[in-house]
Amino acid sequence: MKNKTLIIAEAGVNHNGDLALAKQLIDMAAKAGADLVKFQTFNATRQVTRTAVKADYQRQTTNNKESQQEMLRRLELTAEMHKELIAHCAARNIGFFSTGFDIESVDLLVSLGQDHFKIPSGEITNLPYLRHIGRLGQAVILSTGMATLGEIESAIDVLEQAGTPRDNITVLHCTTEYPTPMGEVNLRAMQSIQRAFGVKVGYSDHTPGIEVAIAAVAMGASVIEKHFTLDRNLPGPDHKASLEPEDLIAMVAAIRNIEIALGDGIKRLTQSEVRNKPVMRKSLVASQTIKAGEIFSTKNITTKRPGTGISPMRWDDVIGRTATRDFAEEALIDL
Image 1 (spheres, rainbow, N blue to C red):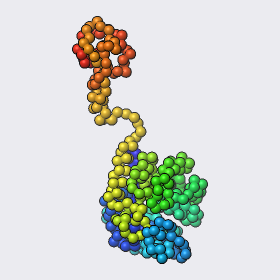
Image 2 (image 1 turned 90 degrees about the vertical axis):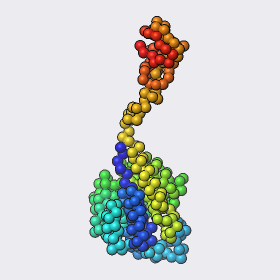
Image 3 (image 1 turned 120 degrees about the vertical axis):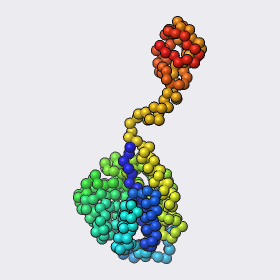
């Protein structure tokens, strides 16, 4: 059986700065059976300049009069809020996880006990940030939206040189568009990354629906990350590109089924097939009455179910032989 896929339910900033809503998101992720629920840890003034513009998808889903920094400031989580969310995750038996978007935010997460780290796509070319995470020597998940293979290679090299073994790095294929059009998914790129760098791979999914995430697991993803929300109609930049609760539940269930279905790759009869084989396969049978001493020929034998007699693969061995006894029509042939 395939190793269990790490399913990260990405709450992100879909809490809208509301601690109660953040806790409801944790409850939903736990109910769905996700392994981790992930938030985002940042300080808006450290993250963007006052004049930084919003992405197109952010302009479409938020107030156009506010800057990106103003939007992000409303979505910050304080240290105390982090502590409450970590405690709530523990109570709901789901792992807490957060992406730190700057060095100070990463240090906050370290101080709160987080021992694995997510590098978002926008930081894959942030050398001091990569070095800081690399020095921790912990498990790292690296998202690669907007990145070339050369940029991915450079980021991995920085992490390794700073102290993180390649075995600790999982690289997520990702397309940075919310939602991602199907024509821009290019899911086979995940396998290209695996071949190029010999790393564990996964998929950070921004497509509508759940089918691409499920396909990624079938293609070898060891990590799936997917945004979710309680309601796509809520205000905020990421709700429109997120799964609602019933879809998150369906995605997790489907991934768990795919894990089982992938099996170990050895072609063998299953227990069910052992039972069904004699019923479904065919044997050599008499197509008419055959008397002892007659020659078996294409005129007096044929193939029919059940498969409890001589296999039709021995047809050439039987044709031309002499019947040693009488056979009624449809009787199984024996020699």
